[in-house]
Each structure stands twice: as structure tokens, then as C-alpha cells.
Length: 365
Image (cartoon, rainbow, N blue to C red; front, side):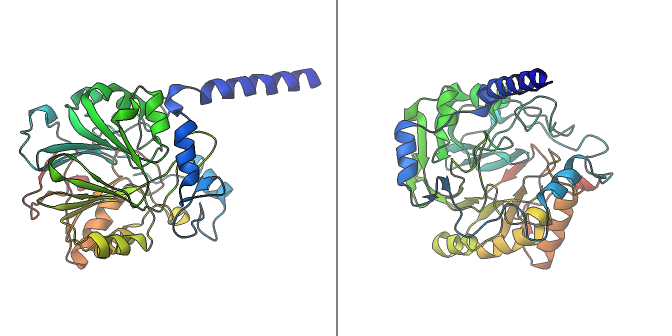
């Protein structure tokens, strides 16, 4: 009996180390990168910290119960769409470089082009949002864009290293078409393991301002979230970004629970022409790290904007709400506050020079 127990432990240990060292799990910050991390004011007690105390789960909830409900509990019949969601396969390679556009690619992935410069944010163009195939599969219709659809881009922008925001197959595939990657401190360990040269990385922490092509400035700004692809959490930083161009200001939110940082960013850098905010994959149990729809509205008000582009919905079932609930709620709340909520289909072109552009309620079909 003892022999079999020891054998099982050895096999499981070996299997774990084989799996965790797969390329999809990225790298571990070492050397100069680790030294920079340890010198950061945001890094305390061997991990990065949020501005405010941020429990992983809301008071009154139990982690075991939340986990049980997610995997084994009764699911809403509309947790996933009953048929393919509407989408439009726009040819990104045919877009004129002088056009100012936003194109949602599903979940938190989007292509942004402004002032003659192209950006690709958090591209997850695999058929799954996890390190393993067939786990956390994309909804039918949300998966129409593939890595080969991405044109040459000036800047790849990553907000944090979770699998549904930093996708190994996609990021690896587009390396030769990417001039520069903009990433939070520590995330470069993943990209370097995947073949990105150090001189292609702009890797910074909150408060850093960097001048890009065509007099565009990007600012690394706070978010209220966490990070981690391997066993250890929070060994890399998470970030939002402020994009300041000669013609407009855009806030790139990434994942974040609601907190005071939105107001601070709005007062310092606002008002914004557009804010791209996470709206989806939420729940009361983790509202510290993901915004509820009413939090999205308040964040937009704090950021001093009239135009919200909601993302982080309609591709993966990472929470227990109906798949289309985030869009239903955010549009209703936006009307109450007289905010312009832009809700394109995946692949539909948003003309950044026309903030009053209207879109149909495609999620109600």
C-alpha cells in the first residue's frame, strides 16, 4: 500500500513539473527583470500589490462554495448562447492606415488604429481561453478571427498575464509581425521565452509615460486585479493604460475591480474620448477584482467620458451569469446616465471620428 502511495505521489509530481514547464505557462522573472521587480514600490512581501486591500473573494463568500458552484453547481440555461452569436469578419489587413478605428475581436481582444499607428490589445485568438485545448472553449461565432488574420502591427499591448488575456499561440504566431510589445513589469519573462527579443519590449510599471510613434504617449496606470500563470500569483504586474494621441484620449482598462484609481486617472488625464472597460465575467463573490455593470458606469463617470466601449463578454463562460446579461445591463444603465455605450458586433468597425455611431442589439437575437 505504501509503495503504491509513493508511486502515485512521484508520478503526480513528475506530471505536474512536466505540465507547468510547458511553453504556454510562460517564464519566471529572473536576473535584471527580477531585480527591477524587487526595487518597485508596488512590490511588497514578495508580490505585487493593489492600491487598496483586495481580497480574492468578497466577504461573506466561501472559496470552496464558489468553486463548487462554478464547476458542479446548477447552470443558467443561457450561460452559453443557444446558437452562434452574430459577428462580422472584417479584413484587418485591408484597413487603410489613415483610418481611425476600433474593432472588437471578442472577449478583451481588440484592434485599435489611430493617428496612423496600430495597436493590438490582449489578443486571444485561439479557440480556447486556457493553457489546454478543449477547456474554456470559445462560443461559436465569437471565434471567427485567427492569428493569421492579424496584419503587421506597431504595438502589441498586454494588460496582464492571465490566459484569457495573454494567449501563447496567438502571441507566438504574431511575433514577426509585431514591432514592439508594451507590457507590465515582469510579463516580459513570458514573451522572451516565446521568442521576443528584449529590445522589442517596453516593460514598465504604473506611472511610467512612454512616447511612441507619431507623438503618441502611453501611460501605465493602475488597475485592481491580480496576475499569475503558474503556481505563484502576483509575481508580474497588471495594468491599465492611458493613450494620448494628437487627436484623442483613450483609456484601455484591462481587468479591474472598481476602486479610487478611476477617479484619480480621470482627474489627472481626463476627460477621455473613449474608455474601453471590462464588462462581463463578473459576480458578487469577486467584485473586488471584476467590475459589476453598475461599477462600469461609475468608472466611466470617474474617468470623465461620454463613450464606453464594453469588452470581456460574449466569448467565454468564465462566470455564472447569462452570456448576454452584461450587454443588457450596461446598455440599460448607460441610458439612465445618458452615456453613449458603443456595442459593435465582434469584427464590426467603430469609426473613432464618429462617437455617435449606433449599433443594433445583436445580443437579443
